[in-house]
Amino acid sequence: MTNHRIALIPGDGIGTEVLPAAQQVLDVLGRRHGFGLTYTSYDDWSCERYLREGAMMPADGLDQLRDKDAILLGAVGHPEVPDHVSLWGLLIPIRRGFRQYVNLRPIRVFEGIESPVRTARAGAVDFVVVRENVEGEYSQVGGRFNSGFPDELAVQEAVFTRAGVSRVLDYAFGLAARRGGRLTSATKSNGIVHTMPFWDELVAERASGFPQVAWDQEHIDALAAKFVLEPGRFDVVVASNLFGDILSDLAAAIAGSIGIAPAANLNPERAYPSMFEPVHGSAPDIAGQGVANPLGAIWSAAMMLDHLGHPAAAKDVTDAVAGVLAKTDVRTRDLGGTATTAEFTDKLLELL
Image 1 (cartoon, rainbow, N blue to C red):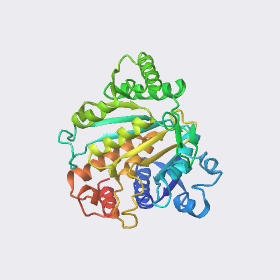
Image 2: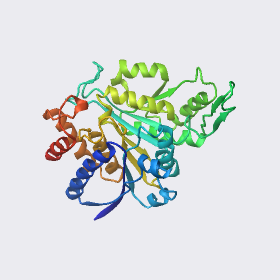
Image 3: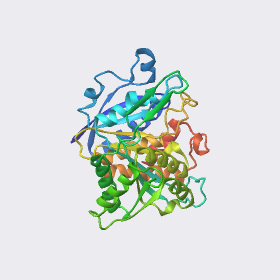
Image 4: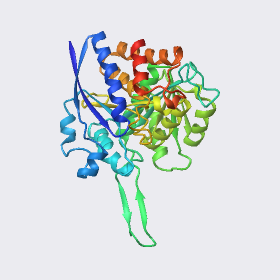
């Protein structure tokens, strides 16, 4: 029997509430499909640790994770810790240290969830945002100068490399070839005169290797509008780090709730562990109340199973999610219901 070593990082806020729900689902699927899961939990890698010790994780944190097959993360964030401190103290070091250069975010409107966009209906909206995850606009190059003086300034440099852009484009085109055969590239080359024309040139270059994929490009501002006006027209959308971050959260809202949105941080070559996480964040306003929506974490766990070579098990999860939403009225607060995290999880397990 195959056994997978899984690192659990509950993190902060509702992360500690939704990760156990995902673990329950994983255990059921392991028994059904004949694979094992061995968990190692890193309960104190969090903002609370930062407040105590000045670090989100130990100095040898990456070494502790290196031998794992995958990482399942709950959420990171605390009102007393600036977001850039928590992000650069945990998530970004893992993403970059393990070359998780693809951030994958599936977007799907499920039957039983009403989208705020009237044209976004179940069966009509099912696409994926592929975000470059380790360079681009989120670089460490830059700094603050003349602090405290009237001419104080901040400089932030975007870094786009041929290798970094090409590899995420190859992944996105390959994904489009396996899906609906359509790819849209997000750009802003009319206003950003160096990095975005470079991005566009590489898109055209890499597209030549995928003649079966029809592709186009859209300026990011127009693309954001078309996400709202025509969400059903998209199949695979590929974007730089910043553009992909914004587009994927917008798309999650179109799908009905950011509480159900999953994400995968992938090292496609599998030289390092990949990391899977719900998009919703730590939600300190509802933390500790037991009302968080576990769907984002559960769907992220399904993506993890697919990455680990268990597509049938992953499909069982998404089918059960679709069943709960289409066939029952069990909903957490963010979806207009009153179910607790535990009640929602129990109903999903019942259908599973």
